[in-house]
Length: 240
Length: 233
Image 1 (cartoon, rainbow over the protein chains, first blue to last red):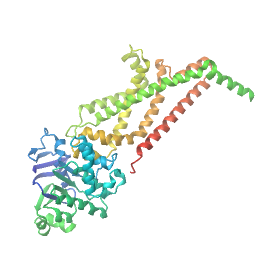
Image 2 (cartoon, each protein chain N blue to C red):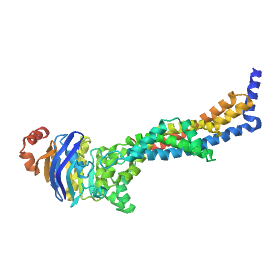
Image 3 (cartoon, one colour):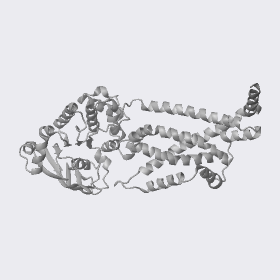
Image 4 (tube, chains in turn purple, orange):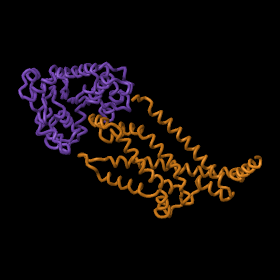
């Protein structure tokens, strides 16, 4: 579904990604872990071109999205993204946050979008917040809304950029629960996170990134119980 | 003491009452407000466009030719006195036009636009970049995200300095006396030369400016409070 070939990204003189090759298949839940500065967020942000790769190719559903001629806005309609800092639109109500993109992009009528939004809100238990503003919500609530906002576009894949890192510890669970539910529903997901429990439980593949490359990839049980490369063993000994 | 009062009363009468002179002040004020109002609107439009031009980037994040144009505009306008700009507009660019107020509106609007542009640019930059990224990640274009998400938030940021700019603009229109438009300041000046008393007309005009700007300040404060409703950040 997503094929990444020889992906490089350089900021000024900082070579962040040094040749990433990967293939995400439909329905997989890829969890990316690694020390900070390893390039995992940059990798994720390259997938929907929030960062423009310096070199390499990214294919999404058979379309070369790194080609400048590709309409990136159209591609992004099918790739949801959830950010570390939620990034809810502060000037809009929760309902408007969710319905803005589907209506402005003429994917749904206003009524359809509202109905769809209410259903999604019910799914995450926040239907009563439809008319609230983001400033009135807790971090966990904001992140659940952010997930709903992405889902409202009916994406084919969901990207999560450290979705629980900015949350108070007691709110991490509610967000992870929503993500688990989403995983069970069959959504293809790429998740950058520090939540090893989530990686082990939900991931179909776990990737370890360091120094701008994928150092190791494996199924969760193998990945955590029998790490092969030394850097990963060291990393796991610190975080587990 | 009574003598002093009698003298003040005489001057006051000469400055404001005789020949219904108070009407002249309000006619002058009308010219001042007309120029300031339309120049402010023009300045806002030009300023927003210039700010967006200055912030435009290519797909790779490079500057565009629009950025260069915007910078040249801002440099020229801020680098020359506004009186001179008015004189140039009056005697050079639009020397064939009879519509003095229009010339003044254009001149002040173009001038204000350069300052508003920098205010608006700062207001846009103060909106967290995550707002733009979130909009883009949903498939909205840069223009759509700017229009529905970033600019509405930027408006809140810029209201205090924009209010400041309006006040400066309103007072700066006093220089239209240079090109024989009869605004409030010029009216006061003309009356004082007729009554041989500078004190009453000039202080009178000053009081009128003060009251108008005080009212403007109150309205802006109310607007700001209205816009801040609903966000408890």
